[in-house]
Image (cartoon, rainbow, N blue to C red):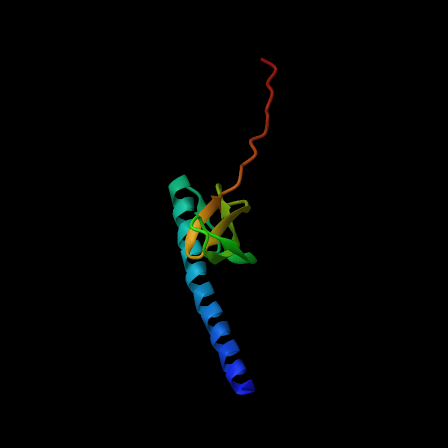
Length: 108
């Protein structure tokens, strides 16, 4: 019986690993596409996991919600943080951040 529980736990961990790889690749594609659409540079060509938790989709099914962080640049000389939230393998939120434009006052 203990061997069966160990096998089930190992299969669940394998499923979680494989599912996480697919979700991560979808997050990389979404971040890359968003940066290209906005004329930004997608830095390091990767995303990093920020959180993992269960959540319900619009139909009430329980899925894993993953939040990923990434960095991009608008000039090539800076790094700005962005994020992608995935529910299962679907992008639910993509944030490329707000670039702060300094308020420059002139004397004219």
